[in-house]
Image (cartoon, rainbow, N blue to C red):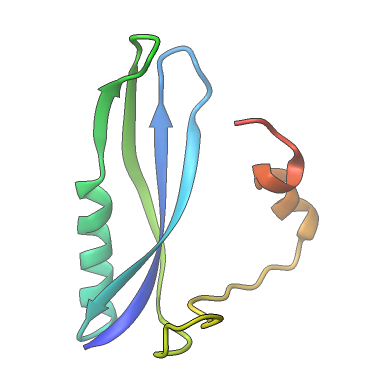
Length: 106
């Protein structure tokens, strides 16, 4: 078995509100990448749910994508262990969609 990191994107919908997206990094143990991807999708689907928020409005979470599945970068998962890395060329685009960098309130 090998440890993989799966990147999942889920969507939260509340009628009348703009959708909210969540990017999750999930560890899965699998014999290979195909099994890891299948397990990641199953975990994402298992997390789909609907509930009433404090305002009595229905919140629905659905899995949108399994974005990536990759072996962890280091098997030693102690302090400071790298789990996953991805690369991009446009920092402005990244800052625009990342609410923690753009200053957007959730």
